[in-house]
Length: 112
Length: 138
Image (spheres, chains in turn blue, red):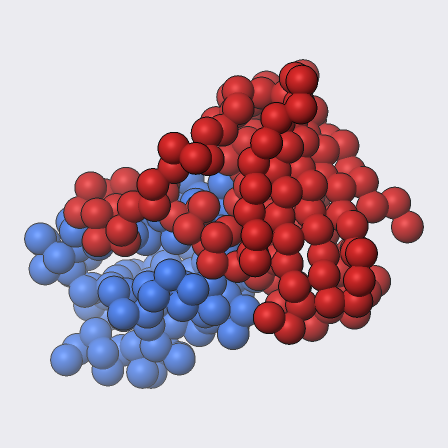
C-alpha cells in the first residue's frame, strides 16, 4: 500500500510518501516525481511515513537524477527511518542524492 | 509454523511474500534492521522472477521456502517454472551507468548480492531454483 500527496508550499513542491514502495507501487512515485519535475525548481520528498522501499523505488529516484541536474532542479529527501536509509546506503546513494534528517534541515539545503 | 509459501506470479503478491518472510524471521527473533534487509533481498528476487521470468502470469506459481539449519544461518529457496535467469551471464552495472542511462531498473540484484552471503541460481528439470544464504551477524 502506498499513499502519495503533492503539496505546493512556498517556492517548492512537497511530495509526501507513505507506506511501501515496491515493484507494484513504484509507478505512483514515478508519476509524482514526473509531475513535480515538470513544474517545480525545488522538490522536497517527505519519507517519514515510508515503511519500505525496494529497488523499484530506488530506481525511480535514480532515473530522475540526470534530468534534475540538467534542469537545475534541487531535490532533497528527508525523514527516512533507519531501516529505509540503510537501503539507500547499501548502494551508496546517500553520496548521490541529497538526504536530510528532517524538514528544517532539508529546507536549509534546498536554499543553499 | 509453515515455512513454505506458494503463490501466483502477480506483483500484488509481493506484499504477501514480504509478510511471510517477516513472520518467519520474527519467530526466530531476528533483529529488525537485519530482518528488513533480508526481506528486501527475497522481495527483489521474487519481483525479478515474477516480472521477467514469468511475465506477471497469475497462472504461474512462485514458491518461497525458508530453512534455518543453524542459529546463525537462514537459507531461502525460491522456485519458479518461468524463463531461466542466466546468472553466469550477469555483469553488474555501475551506479554511474544506471544514472546516466536514466534506467529505472538494474539495482535489484546489486542489493541482493550485497545483502546475502551466497546467491545461487540453478535448474532442476522444469524448475528454476534460486538459493540465498544469509549468515546472521555477518
